[in-house]
Image 1 (spheres, rainbow, N blue to C red):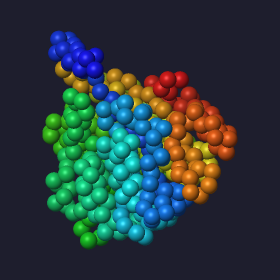
Image 2 (image 1 turned 180 degrees about the vertical axis):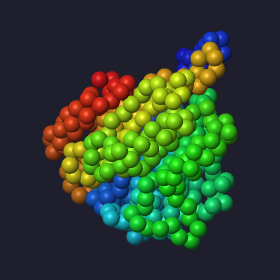
Image 3 (image 1 turned 45 degrees about the vertical axis):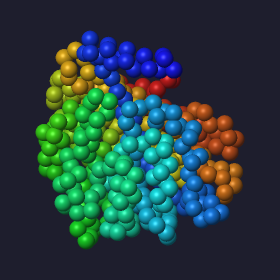
Image 4 (image 1 turned 90 degrees about the vertical axis):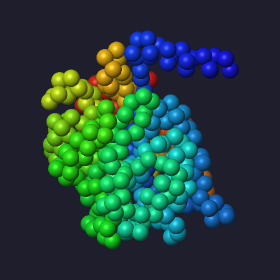
Length: 356
């Protein structure tokens, strides 16, 4: 008990004396909610229980000072549904929050699956739980109030923004706002979060080609633009498979680093192939030295893999990919790890696997 009280004080004193401070952000991929997941989570009472889904990886999330996930489904009341028009129960958000997620990204191609009403209900559920979120807004006034979004991560002030390439052809109606990829808007938003005091800026983008393990030219061009305007963390999703990562000096701002992930892949899903069954989590270390400037010190990744239970009533579980022992899933998890490492070992720049 005494040690637990003394250690934080000791660290704080070191920070004061030497000007040294650290924190960590973890980013996760696409949190899907397919029909089989709904069926597995539904209890005899008609409620939904996701309490088992994330318990095996909650330690990874909990070790970070701040955790971000892409919520790739509207959230609202019955009828709930999976692909192609998603609608998850609020208990799914509860489970993600209990696992340790602080920030929910809502700008993705499924955000309008239940129209303007579904978008607003999702925001209402997130707000009711006091959870941070960016990407979609009930109206223009709500967006103006919500942004710029700057949060405290330890002692660091970090700005978050979220954009999507589209919404599956469904247009926003009734005044709701979806942040689509628009370079002028992004540039203005990045400047706004800087003006609001953000020391570091994370832009999370829904982009790319589904099921492709390498980024397309449009992703590369947009990443180059984001780097040029000084974005520190560029975090991608949507392909439902992993794509390469980079941590290196910013080519346009020599005093800065950039952390770039083209795709983290899926977080939890019921997609079928080994590539889509797994995903990556990115860990970004923040650092403040004697000069008082906030920087990113390092980045690394962890691999995770979704398994289903042995029967329709068994819930899904997310595991560290290398720890899967279930004989029904081990060979597929091993195949995912092999293929993901092949891509990362060949194409990653400065982003190693955590604890490998």
